[in-house]
Amino acid sequence: MNVIFGLVLILSTAVMVFINPDGVLSAMLLGGEKALDLTMKMVVIYAVWLGVFALLEQSKLSNFFAKALKPVNKFLFGPLPEKASDFISLNISANMLGMSGATTPMGIKAIEELEKHPNTEYAITMFFVINATSIQIIPSSVMALRSSMGSLSPADIIIPTILATLISSIVGIILVKVFVKKPKSKLNRYV
Amino acid sequence: MSKYFIPVLFLIIFIVSVIKKVKPYDAFTLGAKSAIPFAVSIFPYLVSIFVLTELFEISGISSLLTKALTPFFNLMGIPTELTKLVLIKPFSGSGSLAILTEIFTKYGTDSYLARSACVIYGSSETVFYIAAVYFANAKTKKLLTPILISLFASFCSCVFACFICRLM
Image 1: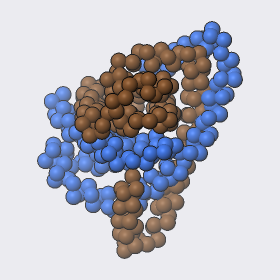
Image 2 (image 1 turned 180 degrees about the horizontal axis):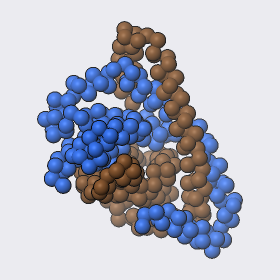
Image 3 (image 1 turned 180 degrees about the vertical axis):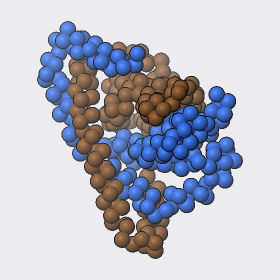
Image 4 (image 1 turned 30 degrees about the vertical axis):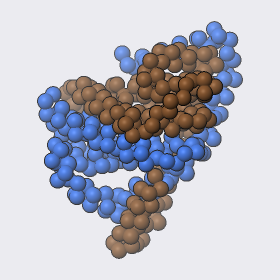
């Protein structure tokens, strides 16, 4: 991240010095403003979702999602600590259903939980790649926008989108399996 | 059908938590409370990403990069009109949504370009944003491998999107 950030920062600022020196600071401030806008929106979304999730957790309903996704989790991540497995399952379920507000808080909690245990670099990388390659089943927001702008068959992108999503996820999963070492440790090492 | 999904799911959660004798008010408030520290910890990372995106756009480097990569993208079957979307998507959700809307108005919502754009938009994620937010509280900052893998995988799905929309 530091490499990419540094490179783009230096290059764009250098160009701006020549073409538009006044624009540097204002562009940076505009970026900050947009970040604040988004954060404000996120606080509200997180508050509602985390409230619902607290109910889900305390009523032990979250175990249900973890149990349902157990085979998938086992294939992707190998043995997982119990709490991390709960958060990962909720994140993946929310992702697939396109509940974008719910995915982020669960994702952050899952990574925090994974980091408490040794040898989880593989699981963390896999988890990130799955989130970053999109596993949404129904592209509902795109379809809504399309139909509002006059599309005659807004749903005809569903199958191509599912296929394309599958391709990116499969490529991502294979690359993680090839390039990141999976720890050989058994489950009891985590506990 | 899908409009019932969230309310019904919530209803089930609310009923089960009451049956299981969870104190709903206490639990919900406790959950909602953690949203503030969450947002606070994420904010600086969002600022960094957004500052970078703004500079990248306004300096013209992004359009330069778009131009430079267009021949390669064309070779892979991605039309020139869509290269900007492919490049902006990993950085900015709102930016790519604006481009998608622009493509809709320019070429119609049911054209090949619009459908490919939809599939590209729907099948990829804002990789840099997710990296910034998900790892905001994490100790590891070794993000290069996961980011490169995700970007490559997303690019594959973009190529595939332009191909499949020719057929379907």
